[in-house]
Length: 251
Ligand code: AMP
Image 1 (cartoon, rainbow, N blue to C red):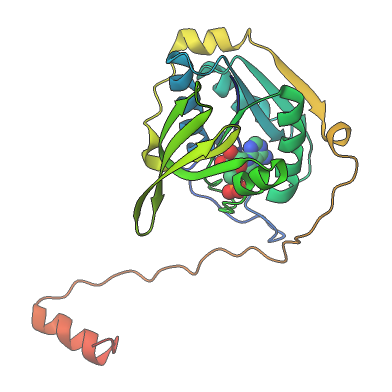
Image 2 (tube, rainbow, N blue to C red):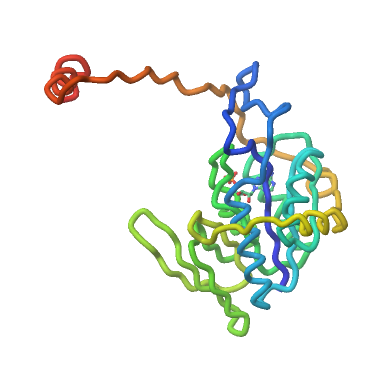
């Protein structure tokens, strides 16, 4: 069974972000970028399923400018067999990303797609769900456990929900989105990084996949959250209670 894993390049989660000068997005020029953390988890899951003999090959896909090839190299170092770069300088909405992925899934004859539950830059949490709808496939979202039974063409997943763990039985082909607790991605060794340099990345222009893009959402403004005021030290519980009552007026 072939598996496709989507890997988005995002601003490194460990650096401070700032808004660009025209207030339309987060600044990405000369900023350290990284693979979306939930996509690292998706890659790790694909690797574990491959090591268990369930998945035969892993194709990593990223959509974006030339710089996303760095993220694809990381996916190859994490164990992907090949990578596809869909080249575009435009910022696409989740629906457009899902449309592109749907075309690739059909071309690749994949039966399983693993995506992160959300990209930490736009926090949309939509692409996996939209992809499953476009393909007419089953979907397991926010998965913290994935058990594939190839003989019965089924997958059992546990979903992390606000009211507890939900266990679902899904029929293949399936779209899975990964939760934080699904696994802990392994460390990438230097030999893996070196090997990844020899693995193939094929580039496809966005226009050759989708001739006309509909932009259904327009970003009007992006603003940084208000600066938090510095805290103060109080000398006693009584002073704290007094301040909460008379200054903050919360009790
Ligand atoms: P979102 O719906 O934007 O929160 O993204 C959910 C998931 O969709 C991400 O974790 C990625 O796996 C995938 N995805 C979104 N945008 C891209 C992209 N430009 N390239 C590759 N994968 C993407």
